[in-house]
Length: 123
Image (cartoon, rainbow, N blue to C red; front, top):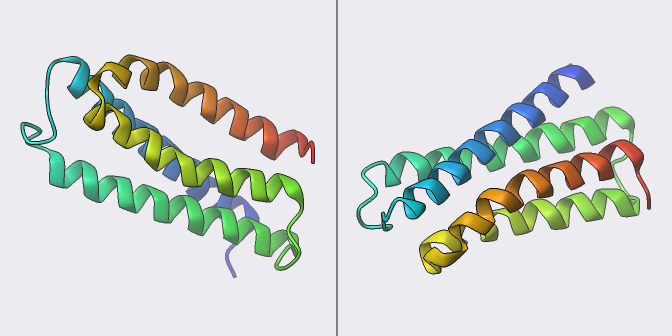
């Protein structure tokens, strides 16, 4: 049986990987790059998917260890909504290059807000 702490490390590691990939994409676009000119496009796409999977695995594993397998409280739904929106934010620099700088500033704020929701469970 995997412990709560292992799931937490997986969850955090997935977040670090996801934010690294999305920050790299935004920086690539800020430097004038496009989706087509990104030589590491397949790698970043694969890492993006792996990171999201690890985040989900760790998050739902922690919920199982807490005994929250049905009837999720509001803070869990908020986290699920936030994690569903982050991949959308990550594609914004390619779709609208002018948003790349905003994405670089928004990603850490989103991460801090998500951590606040998880730690303080306001709803």
